[in-house]
Length: 49
Image 1: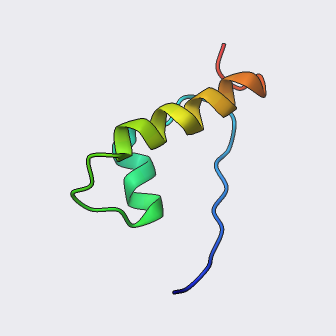
Image 2 (image 1 turned 90 degrees about the vertical axis):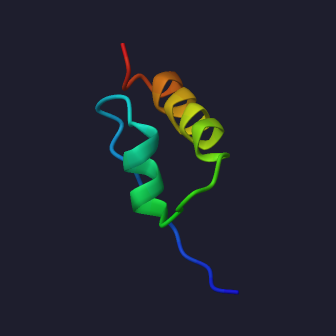
């Protein structure tokens, strides 16, 4: 198993497709929930108004 890290600019909301592409996830139904989580963090950091 490999480990890596990713960062997202906190300038605006990220689409599930964008997040899936950056994380290399294909055909996984959990991407919607991962997008909600990432966008929730971005919102709390003040990036989504």
